[in-house]
Image 1: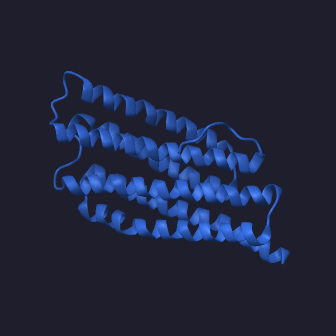
Image 2: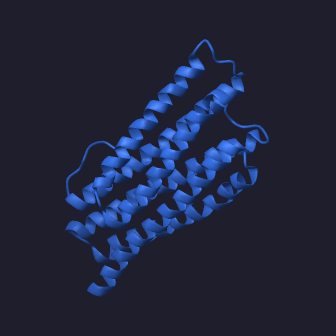
Length: 218
């Protein structure tokens, strides 16, 4: 029975990595669709989000079954509880990638943002992809040094997010109301994607060390 239990715990962690890999693909494709007005890629992201949702739901069922039948304690309990919380954040990250892709699809064949902000969004997208890649490695290895790197990347995204608001509220902004709404939403999506990744990183730190690092994104 003990060997079965340990195999189940390994499966929990492997499934988290699998979902994180799919989220990385989703945000990579969503970013390209958004920046390049690629409607085919946008529709691919939208269609494949259901796979992330299904895997997250299946993982939750496994974790709840382990809690009920195995009654884990100490680190084993932390693994299962952390998995339940992390799967929810990963599912939300997949949803955010889908929202970014939906913006690209809605505005096709036009691009979502004005030329003056395209470089800003390209950089936000690049940082989101980097954070997603680091998150997958973090889930694989529990190398908590990656959590610090992710927080630094998140700080850069936050600065870019603020700069977008400064731009649309400034006197030089010439966009229509719909442009302002789209840009504001897009910036918020990019910022929240990174926030959820950092929230997961804090949970992995807790798993690795047993020490909570502070508040997390909801």
